[in-house]
Picture 1 (cartoon, rainbow, N blue to C red):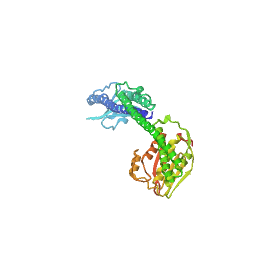
Picture 2: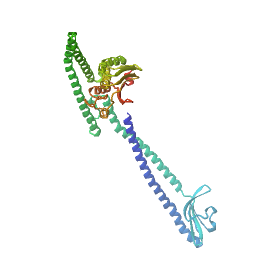
Picture 3: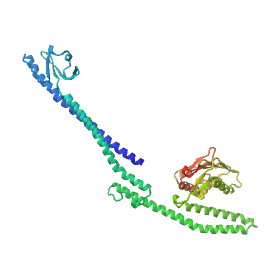
Picture 4: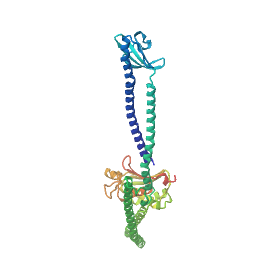
Length: 417
């Protein structure tokens, strides 16, 4: 998983940074120690030789040096070693590295030369071993960091994959662990079980209420149809009977939608539904809302496409947007446009009040609010819930020149465009 591997890389990087910092610290200590040893073994040795040889040379006594050491005084000093500043220094003569102590006594200048010192070789070996040790320590830290990162991250990845696969809560890994990962797994299981119980209660409540409403709505629809058929010669009764029938059918359709929303999306069949007939039918149903208003209701089909979804859900979502625009637009136009993978409803109403826009952006809705094309009661809340159920997106915006724009955008997996 991307999250797991990212956390794993961070743990390995932290291990390597710690190892690198430790190596730099110990290398500095080793360098100081090596240089201190050099001063002790080489510089002090040359100074001791000089303090012994200089008085003997001044007294005219023979100065016999141990193997590898030379003492030169005055004119016997080689030209390449003359004029050196006092103290111990390293010189290369004919490609050979020498440790040279330059000094001066009462009779003139002198030099003590260590030409056979093995310290440079020892120093090279020491630094080589330190470099090998640093590389080995960093390599070991890399493998150890990866091992520990896997031990830490893999259980979390297993837990997240089990949750994504919606496995049974009793089958989640790490539940029996006594460490922090076990506590995390049990907390996930408990919280998930609580959410499942809440969703189940909500789903059962919605389903039960919808089933209970179906019977009285069926009775109302039947009675309204009977009333219409028996009052054909009484126009004063035909209009209210028609309104009752229309309202009852709208309520029945809403109940059907609520029943569908109460079910898991995977359990609902998703037939291929062409969108233009659904939009045209909803436009015809909403024309009665514009009677007596100077509002033009238009449909523009730039691109017609089928959607894999139930017709009832598509009709409820699109119809609520069209009905909302027609209800709150007093003059101008309501334009419904079919474009690639999207249905857009554009109106010239008063626009979207800022409080309602804020509540809509936060995912909340109200059943009341300022009048306008942003009416965000049950209709808009239902549209948003249907879009979430289908996996579509509901976009809300301001129309240039006044008004609002609502757009339902369907993902490619729902369309056949």
